[in-house]
View 1 (cartoon, rainbow, N blue to C red):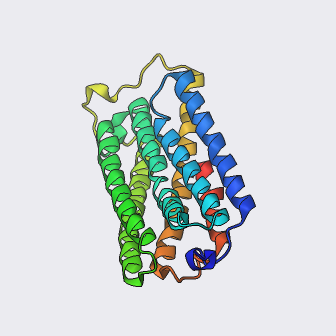
View 2 (cartoon, rainbow, N blue to C red; view 1 turned 90 degrees about the vertical axis):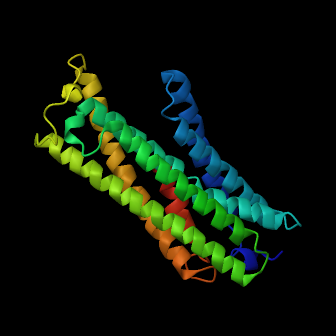
View 3 (cartoon, rainbow, N blue to C red; view 1 turned 120 degrees about the vertical axis):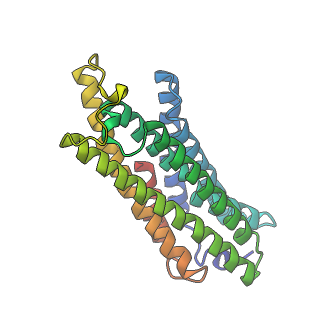
Length: 257
């Protein structure tokens, strides 16, 4: 199996190693957070980072072992690197849910639990679509028609994810604006009062979490736009055939989320 046929270039070994290290560190950090804080919140990021590690290992393997299993490892790397970031967005949705609970549900358009429920359900739908399309495209084995169908299915999935992230970001900005300017949607809710036991350090932690959430949202939007353009160009497009774009928008941006 020719690497130029699969990738359009010969994958750089150092980029694969760098990505494995970066996402490996993220995986370990998430695991420590789960154990230290005894919280299930970082589990989503842990799964996303672990999936990325698997994907980049498969990518390095496919680039260094030209055998009958090359197409399989190529399919694994493409699907995992493409789809597993949905776990990062799911983590963002849960984070916003908890921030809304802490800052005041009255400033949010939806009830806190709905932010997690609605957006995560749509995240799962996006992931299923991307996995289905990636599996079809990666297993096309040279069939241009199946590759095109698989690519189009993945494009639908990533476009859907982009729309949901934009909607999520807009709702988050709306919530933050209303909180800062004290413009609640509701004033008669029993759960609208903040917990008076919250300490200053906890308040600072919430502020840091909020700012980190907005930064992560911007990075996810940038990455999603890159993937939309890539898939819109197709398997013979310039972006998918240029490794530098993958290094910038996947290896560099995703660990920051």
